[in-house]
Image (cartoon, rainbow, N blue to C red; front, side):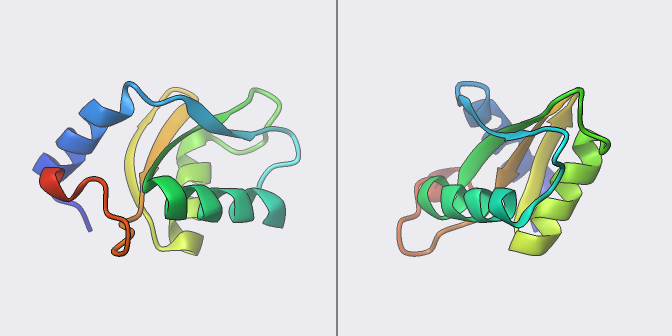
Length: 97
């Protein structure tokens, strides 16, 4: 669980990230969960976007993915969300935490 200072530090880093996870009308499939899991393992911090065709809100998607993958929701703004999960083997953001 992140505290507010850690969350703020990760938010500042996330502004420069490209969106790599898109959720559309197919909603949350096993394939999207697998993509998110692989991306979190490789990058620790990922940005996603929920398209207008999705039946779920960006908050719902972020919470569901975070719950399934034991990640933290860093922020949700509009249709975009940012997730973080620490990778202890290849930690990139230890200096921010």
